[in-house]
Length: 224
Image (cartoon, rainbow, N blue to C red):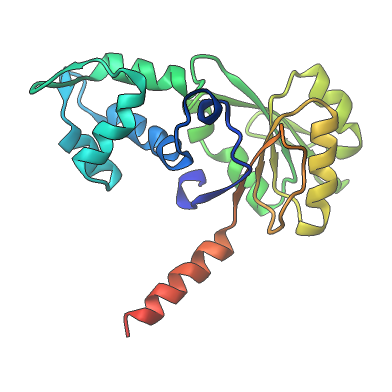
């Protein structure tokens, strides 16, 4: 589910950018390189920039430029050491520890996210979900009990949530985001079709499926 849409950033003050002046485009490709490495056969010890380029959809020179920021483990003419590069990227992406995630809104989209196995596989534990509908509150979805959104601040603090996912209608998104931030959350993934206005120290990623489809529609029209 998460991989089907292109995330559009709101705010560019990522720690990685500030520390090394790495472009947000390069950072956006790091998870793609990691995915390629995870798909390499277990017996393969090294991989070339050409292999990574083919998996990500860029050229080999771009791969080498992106990875040059991190002193990647490898040998010129031989390739990158798969296990070591995988560990390096996981460290740079902050995936060496589990992230505790809360979802606000368990309609069709929220339910799909809760049921998506890729979150857990990537190191993100969804620990709580919230909704306003009495028919949904108390239900168990994929092992997660849906809580009343009235309890959001208290539960988020108790469960040490670090990432908030918003899957509410657009009209409720800003208020929910403000409540996440008030509870100490500094990273928000917004699926609602709205632009959030939050403090500069809060990282926001926006995933808007309808916008991406409209962009595809435009390009389709250019094909004649």
